[in-house]
Image (cartoon, rainbow, N blue to C red; front, top):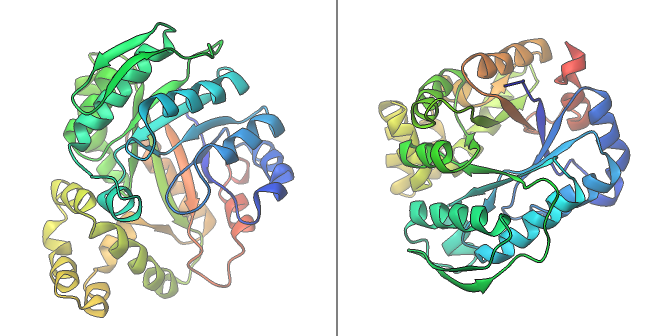
Length: 325
């Protein structure tokens, strides 16, 4: 499978200002853009603009939560994007987290594996164009048929951390999207994916957090806030226990659970920060990104973290581009 170099969108600044920057991304050798859906732009609007503005870029969601829209609505949005950008759209589906789903959106976060599996199965059936009337474990659909038949059905990817979701993405989808892991962690993840795929090629998309700054103290201080915010979410905590970081992170988890946020941040070891956030000179960062690919990633979604106030985000991203090396 060919290497695909992608970045996370939206880029800094208002969406209406991004047309020229998207063209510059393509000029710089980036092949993909990947949107997310947390508390900013929705996953589809930045990609719809890019579909019209820059035909050289492949477009993907990383990810759309399986809970915060109904499955037919997700399928409609995916079909519309695939219709707007034939052969250039990938729909990444994941469980998201209890924080986003339950706390922010008021939707019960129940049976996440089954909900993602059912959504993937429904979308596969809906994209075939027939009428779907089926009771899944987590929802029912009675007589829905997609009114759009894209020339090329979208690629379907599953956001995965541990083995169950990784195997689901390998067996029933076109691959997986992984997040918050080191280059060395990728080998363990890729082994599960390849073992479950039955020999079929599967895409492995990795969101890679990068800050191309040599001010290590400033970067580490800022990165600790991001790491603590994510790693105290149960799904991410369990992922890093599986990865073997339990002993390194237990102090942070204990302090966080006691309500001592300052102690929790201080308890995150430098080596954990350096594992999960790529930092250093642009050349060093590009070399570390290469290690993700060497260990099994097929597509990157590079996210520049603005941890160093002296750093210009757009210039930082350009310094990481394929053409910069």
